[in-house]
Image (tube, rainbow, N blue to C red; front, side, top):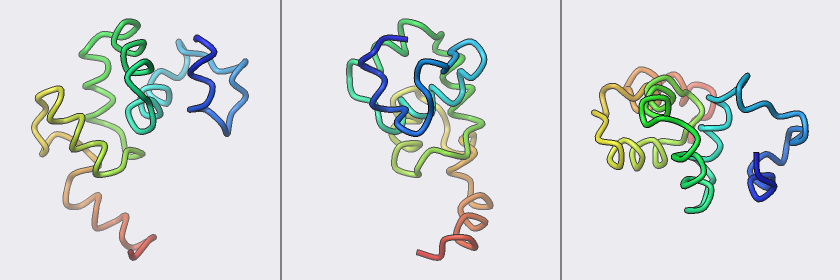
Length: 97
């Protein structure tokens, strides 16, 4: 992974981050915090379907990011886990704001 992506992985050892072992984690971070350059790298290195699968199954994306990327990739909101009503209600139990 290129060095300019290091700033998105501040809480892990970037030198040990393995794109092959943890692609979902990397996709989530870039979709949540990445700039145009990071997203371009992601699109170049992963298929559109792999990114959409992560969008479907992620529970770590914010509602704002998930909604944005669902629009960009043409994914129905109902198919995005973190936008589902039951997930949002569960999340509020832990963080009531």
